[in-house]
Length: 171
Image (cartoon, rainbow, N blue to C red; front, side, top):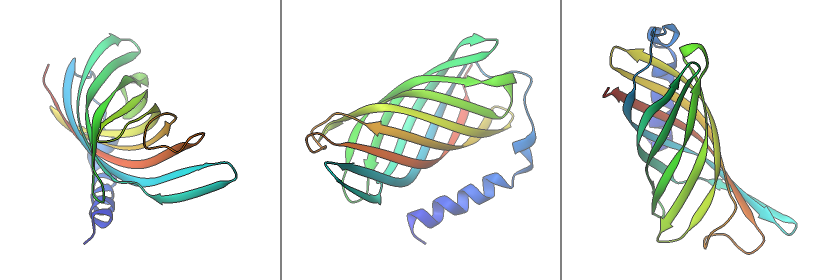
């Protein structure tokens, strides 16, 4: 099975889990999260555009609460692009969980620094499930790369991804 097939199989398993509808009365003060995602990258400018499969993205994050009503947390971590080509960098931003439910919104930035550079803002929407101190999230994320050595002059690239994340509460 291809990596895309495995990703969709994992999404299907998570989406049919009965714990998705359950909500916890509180969220953790801090958690660590591992994510994997794939999707499409759209680029264009000067009258032309192209769509290609995005690289497999792996990330490791730490998320900590900065406010509890409404729930707001900050996240930061490392990201790697693997597959046909590789890249490494960092991500960071803020997340909001309205009503402490399973829905999560995020806004942040992605910075790829090696062996090429890319930087841009990102936004995402996730549905999360919990089972005690562990949980998972199914997340749709859009990143608009606006600057970097991997972009032709005057062009931007939009990366749309479906991510699966697993987290563990640490506080």
